[in-house]
Length: 411
Ligand code: GTP
Ligand code: MG
Image 1 (cartoon, rainbow, N blue to C red):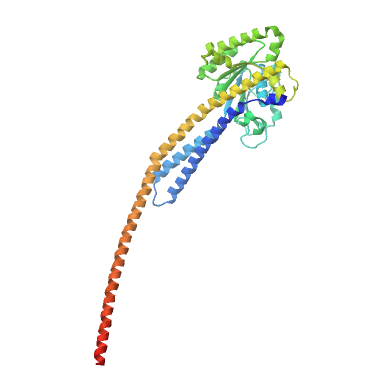
Image 2: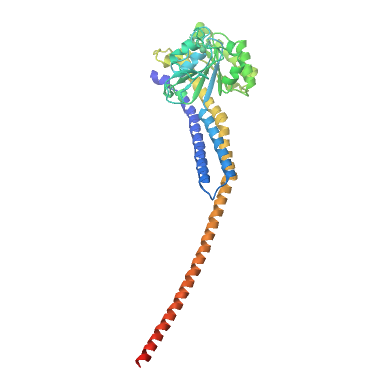
């Protein structure tokens, strides 16, 4: 059926690996933190174990663990979208969200950086300018980030678009989508790119399949690639619905030409892939608009071509999700797992082992003292018995004496 065709996607299974790993790692750090605080309590409450230096060390450990817990809770998978104005960056994001959230229109639209993510708490949906407290209605998005509006935010602004977790599974799996203004604008904003985008796990270049990759786009990605070692890069030749229907007899040739140019970009210009097949797999011909229309129920009768383009969109979604989860697992959690191991080893060597030795020593001393006491008690008891035996003898002798005396008196 159409609905199962539309929802057929396996991206979630890979993304859940990230969420599961995050939960597991958070549990490890949670356990460590409980363990440390009970140790601190024992040390603080026991006069015998009093050791200020050890207490200080333990508190240091505890604050390290807390800092990592904070970083862990903020860790999410990030995808950044780039491309020239009107290529459909915002449209791709909307298709991934299954609903039109981001303003998407002809001409220069997205006016600033927009980070779409799930709420961390149960707050209702809202938008919020970073560094500001005020929560604004989601409906204010059009006014705030559409360059067509007089109130549009300045390009350097970072806007948080916070959605309820259950609104979209991608966001629920801890994925953050970064929408950006066109490359002509973003290329001028080096500092913003560094602080808002360079920590992305996956970069998606959205091209317009009706034309061909431009010099600005190529130059822009050369700079991105020079800042990062081998970024995970995907290329979408978007608006393929329009491009492929203009001269249907040319469809394959146009596709081949896009492929060739995109592969040249990935392999020769950027050097992010050395393997031809791998590079080819990261290039897609899609229609974000059609994908959105299928997903939000606006198209209930898709043509065969639309279905094919939609399958390609799903291939893109599955591939980038898998890559995203794999990359984020490595970069975000790899060293925290290592840190956990190192912290535990250090904790054991510098604190637990000496502490256990100390406790053992105390127990030993206690046992010895008790043994000494026992010996003393036994001695005393023995003396008592001997004394009472003597007493017995004396009393028997006395009895006998008394009897003797009695007999003599009677006589
Ligand atoms: P800026 O925000 O200005 O940088 O543009 P953008 O890259 O975000 O493009 P946007 O999503 O605003 O799309 C521009 C226009 O193209 C909108 O009218 C979309 O509806 C339309 N559009 C986007 N993708 C497709 C597509 O695959 N097919 C068709 N036919 N139209 C599309
Ligand atoms: Mg946009």
